[in-house]
Length: 626
Image (tube, rainbow, N blue to C red; front, top):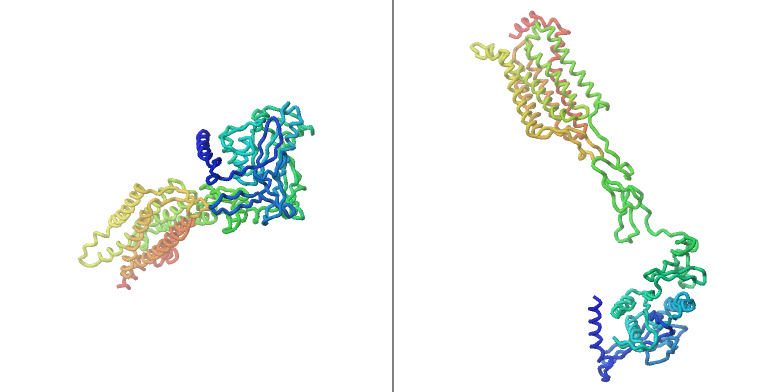
């Protein structure tokens, strides 16, 4: 890469040489030569520093030779002008600065920091030359130019140092004694990069090349050393810029960073010596907003500096566990933030438990309610020879009471921690048991109609009043529900799931019904059987019979349908364990509706009106009805 630059540079210089040094004044450009300050030595160091920073740029008309740029500065009402070589006002050992009255006002002053750097260099070279341990029998000198913070003067000064004269001739070296070892340039990166590009072409070395692997002790007793690369130890002053009362900037040393400190205190700082821009010794608040505590994140304010922000609470399900967080972290799926939103806690698991009051109340109600049909069945068995029991189809009544007992008990499968097997069978068990119950009622209703129609002369329906007809109706109705449930379990069965969507703060342990269509078809089939029973019983409610059950079946089916129609919106509007509780309540309420409407009047007659449960009363009532 450097060889390419070198070739290009040689070509450019070759083409420009006739322009620079042509005898024809029409095509010759003016050459700006700098006069500088020189200190002789065996090894020379080049220095390019901006001692003045006020420049006067002359107007260019493109009709004459372009005038030189003047480097100027104020000093007590006058101008310091850095002359070109042609003026020759400078001498050996100074910068040849002449005093003139100002021709125009320049607002920039003498660059004192650059002058300090020059003085520092002179002092350092004097210290090195006086110490025989550093460079024995060798003295260091320097050649310094004022660059005026102009890239043009940086380039001119570098070429003059490389040429060795007070004029620059590219690619020519005119030895005048001591060799040039290195060039120290400006601290401004734009200028130093230019110097490095030119010097790299000529393969110039880091002054420290002559100081490799050296150790020495200064007059102060402090030891200084250079490693094998010529690099010294890291020694830095920590400086505080302080504004004086008259408006000048002062540089006050408030600490140091010294890797060679013999006491081992590499870093020292005196906080009481620091004066902040506010004029106080306390550290000012560097932001216009207070720190955001854990649980919040920093959101920038539109149109304001980056140090201005507002603390925004973390979104739902996210935390921040550090101060001044720029974002929040999402909790794992099974965890949820604590109220302060700085840590994730395990989510509570919710289900309809036996231990909570709601679950306990429903479980006790289910268990006690299941005993009621059993007690009624025992009463019917005890009074099976009485007219009221015989008239209401004793065998179907017993089967209905058994199915009602199971209806109450099946609600227990919905309470407690769900398991895979329970999820698979609970809805199926509920559907089949309730289908048996409603089928018995439907069979009783149809048998009441057949019994009345069979009493008419020349009726052929007498053979349909036998018990096998009731069992056939029950079997067909039960078989259809059984086929529906088996198909459901085969294609898309219910399963256990952990629901975190309904309530993000909880893990709802529930049974997913698998196919919602199959579930609602099962409930719809129960509704169909109940509706048929209701319609038939309603039409047969006024048939002449001593113990006509049609009107009781009408009320029971009306109550049954009302409960389950109300369940549909209630279940859709509830969430979590309350959805399960609503279904349990519907099971208990519909079962109690059948028990109360179908068997409460009969039990009342059997227990408290035995006179109405006699053959004589039945015959007398039948004659009155005729």
